[in-house]
Image (cartoon, rainbow, N blue to C red; front, side, top):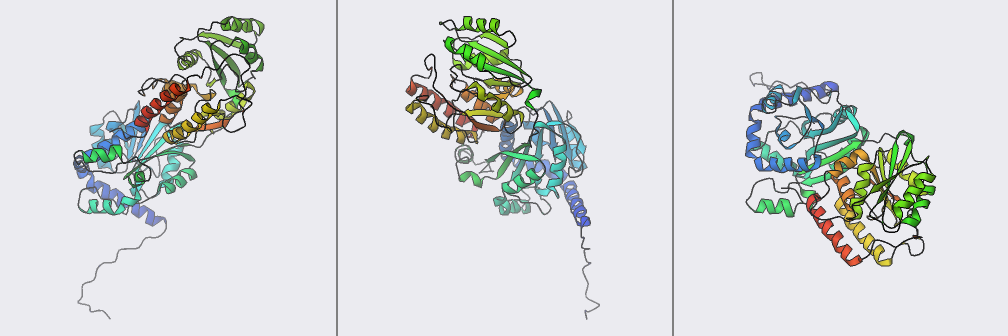
Length: 493
């Protein structure tokens, strides 16, 4: 029997079921309110870290369009994001008010994202640090309801390997403390995203040195943090996802087939006669790059002979294949843009597969691959094949997506995505004579799902290959790869 004179500690009631969940939400809200006034102080003490985070978000997101910011806290990260409109939610009324004072242009609401979100739809959803959320899947379910097919979801969170150090930072008041934080791995997030109807696209791991140490910090974060295996030790994870694809019938879309040609007179008729009907309407655009063998006249004959087909002739600038293709893209009016080389080494009969692949949503950028099926005769020289395979391995690393053939002329993308990629042309710091690299790296920069589609590669029956001077061309490709490495792999700090 206990001594009645001994003071007793009042028992804290144990909550069960949903009452426990609501109790946790209440404690998180109380903690956020209690620390709201000091939140910006902690941010100012860690300015170097937040600048690193902000610059990575700026690189990943680009133009956010209509942005939804989940758990915006005091809105610090909005300083780094370019958006047409900003909607943000925060559970703490005090933090939300501080955010409004700093960002009066934003629509900032006091709202629990695990229970509701603004209706949307939104082009980009930024989710800041899920470590103090009770039900992440419930939040993701609400996010999914506010998405469009092209929406990108970016989650900024922390590497669970840093849990002990972050706990020490909270106890020493270097960081705003959290109530029983979650520590999830990338695999955990991938599973939650899949359950809520998302597909994980890309994971960027950044910030190996979160404190400003002159010279050393920049050296580590810029030149060491990205290295394979070492990158697994970075503090921050930036997870990019998209809604699961929603297949649509190809018949809903107009297709523009761009055929760049220079001295390909003997292939024009075959291209027209063999071109299948694609989608709702097929537009065939021959981009003539100042041919001397009568190619433009042959196109005009086809226009007269096949009036029921939408055949167009566009003049190229006679600079490079890439500029010729861009001229065709500029003239195109279709929803989907396709490139088919005029040598017809990739068969026009296989183009419906590309349309089906992009309309199904399985890929947002469809890249033809000649490296799967056996090739006919001397369709590709041995040296070209070795070079293609080598560059394919390098490109797969740079793109973060398996690409077996970088120089296959058959590539398919949405015209709306081309309008964004177009703004990146000539910004990589190296020339792309063929256009393949500008398109592939532009697609990667937009976080598009890149998918290889095998094709049967055949020998050309008319004209000569334009892919000569292999060694010089190889150096050009290496220069572009290096430029892309600096843009895509090295942190932009």
